[in-house]
Image (cartoon, rainbow, N blue to C red; front, side, top):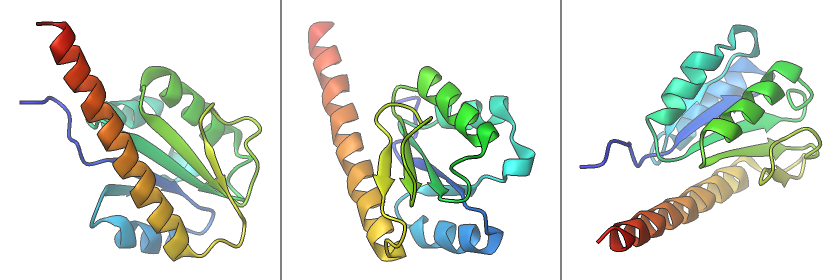
Length: 139
């Protein structure tokens, strides 16, 4: 029995709360979706929730990408959690953890969701392979 939930947790930090909720509702069929309010950043709770899952994502829109609190949270999470990834929609990767993904500003939400689903699946396969190799090495 694995101590981790294999379903990815995806945090959504958009400047528009209603847009965040709508996006979260649309991805709940393949992930545990949470809206991250930039005014209520709790580092310990964020890291604890990420630790319960094999992989974690943070999706940020163009307006939120320059929020220093969100960037610091992402950097801390990437240092603590091996499989924490960031997806920045409509921005650049300056100040974001290594391995973050940038998408064009006017990307359709369905394209973002498809990319997120595919990236999550690839990450899940990679984690599974790494666990399998470790089990073989420990024999």
